[in-house]
Amino acid sequence: MRRKKTLHPLVRIFLSFLFVAALVSGYLLYQWYQRSGERTTRLWDWLRNPGENTAWMMVAGERCNDAPFAFPTDGFIGFLWDDSFRPGHRHQGIDIFGGQEPGITPVYAAYSGYLTRLPEWKSSLIIRIPGDPLKPSHQIWNYYTHLADRDGLSYIESNFPPGISELWVEAGTLLGYQGNYSGDPNNPTGVHLHFSIVMDDGDGNFRNELKIQNTLDPSPYLGLALNANQNPGEVVLCEKTQDE
Ligand SMILES: [Zn+2]
Image 1 (cartoon, rainbow, N blue to C red):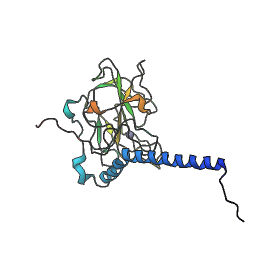
Image 2: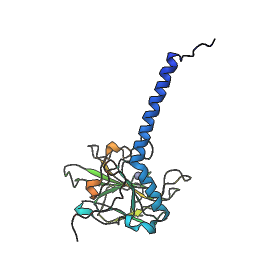
Image 3: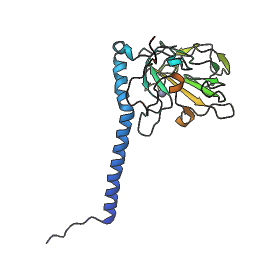
């Protein structure tokens, strides 16, 4: 005679827990793909052959629909604000891929302000804007990074050496060139500019730019659909509100 097998209650609880965990992670992965997967696919299309997809390119200096900021560099906007590169991650800025080798595509100031480069910054600089053009009583900071090659050799213009602080620069000033510095020479990024708008801490310093909570949605500043939550997979381009 065979005894009917029953599962120990603890095993049952464990199995139901596994089932729920699988459902939740499946849902999160799906959400993640919806948010950024299509963009990743399109970015590869662009990087493989930028010349064939020039219609996807934004042009440096263009000011879209009277937005306060000028577009800082040439290229395809590969990733948006609040995109996610892995489940749980939230991107704090936009990534603009020039489609060229490192050190070729120029990067310009999107808006006038006071430039600072910390002594240890190889690929980054930040520009303080005393009066936010959209909220004049607030101070904000424009952050530019990946302006170095994979080994950390800087592409930032020589007039902005490490340690420089509070130097006035006009919108349109050449800051440097797009690079692929990641901190790990064996694993460089694609050649791009990462641009973000960082909030002030209230004491005249910028907040930690790595946290999305410390950054602003760049859409209204550049006149473009740059919020990943509102733009699931469209190529971001300047949509003219009126014919020229
Ligand atoms: Zn980025």
